[in-house]
Every structure is written in C-alpha cells, then in structure tokens.
Length: 126
Image 1 (spheres, rainbow, N blue to C red):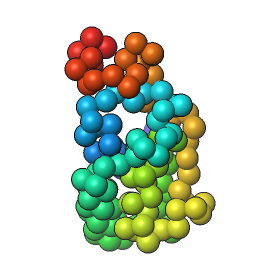
Image 2: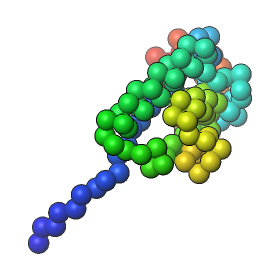
Image 3: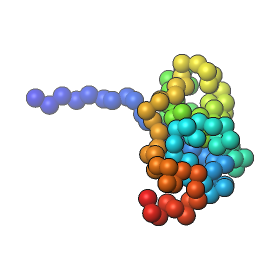
C-alpha cells in the first residue's frame, strides 16, 4: 500500500562567512580554539553573512514562510556562532531565543595537533 505524505520542513544550509583564521591562512579545527572570539568572522565575513541573511529573508517571503517558523542551528565555533548572530539580526530574530540553538555535536572534523593553528598549506596533507 503506497501512502502519500507531504513533508513540510525545508532546510537551508549556510557555511560560515570568511573568518579571521581564513584571512590569516590558519587551520582552526579544535573546539578549544574554535570557540575563541579571536577566531570569529572577519569584516568581509560579516558582510557575507548579512547578504546571506537578506537573500534568505527574500526566499522566505517568496515562499510565504513566516519568520516564526524559522529555526537556526549552528556549531559552537566562534565563526559559525558569529555568522548565525548576523543572519538572525538581519532576519530580526532574537538570537538568544528559542529559534536559534547551538548544536554541540555539529562541528567540523578535528585535524589534530599536527595541523592546528598552522598554515592552510598543510590542508593538502590532510
């Protein structure tokens, strides 16, 4: 018996904007370093996050999706938290409210101490 169900959830995925480590050419993959504010977004990354927020808001309006239905999940890394804060601000969502939630298990792979805080040039070895 075939049943037809209509799933109504939609998901958008946004990568963090350009971070300070991106500008410096550093690998930051450990949680210990990743949460440090000195590794949040660079000014260009803030601009990217603002633009992403504006494009997302346009998408929501075009699809008649009310802001109260939006939930944002982000990793504990400073660059992703900062991106989520900027996007939430652009959407006029309260960042400290129930619609925005840090997901502790959502983070990038840790490359180990042999690569941490070293040059992006090492990425080819990973």
